[in-house]
Length: 254
Image (cartoon, rainbow, N blue to C red):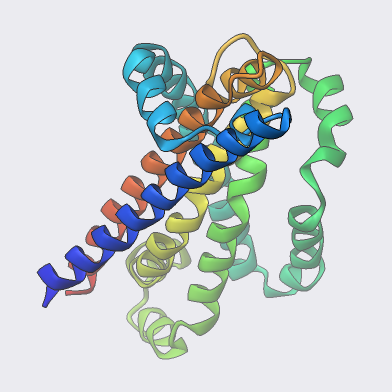
């Protein structure tokens, strides 16, 4: 049954790729007849993307690795902030009522609106600025997961820990963290792709390296093959990480 599902997905994917290729070839032919600009000037064919990746894989992987490192530090900073706020919400529940709406508003605010502040604070193209953008986009899913885990965790566990004379820090380490782990793992499936997107957006503010920088340069050079190749690598890496986390999550639950 599982093998059949894989075959169906492969068939659907192959049909989509073939339709994409044929549609752009047909559009190019009609554009030449009518003396118009072909869509391939903006949207490359799957064959063009494949050739671009094959011919420039060293450059693509090098720039992607830089973005991944920045995203790693970004999500690490976001996780530390989410953990800190989760602890504060647990210790001081009244703090949540005033702070959580503010954090929600910050998360809902368009990242472009923070651009002037980021440039003034960190400088244009700053490594710290890119990491900050990555953490700003990725922290909220983890904060919501921790808050949900703490809110819905059985109070009986907490009372039992206090009855046995456990300190607040011991209760947090031995009870809160284990109960929160499934929620955090689930949130990482959103937070990690968000951190990569955040790092890519941060690189758009101005830097000399990174997959975001490569996308911007390729757009100005009217090189859609490189643009889509870069975006495809980001997508492939994000899906791979989400798949690994999903496997870890299943093992943890079992």
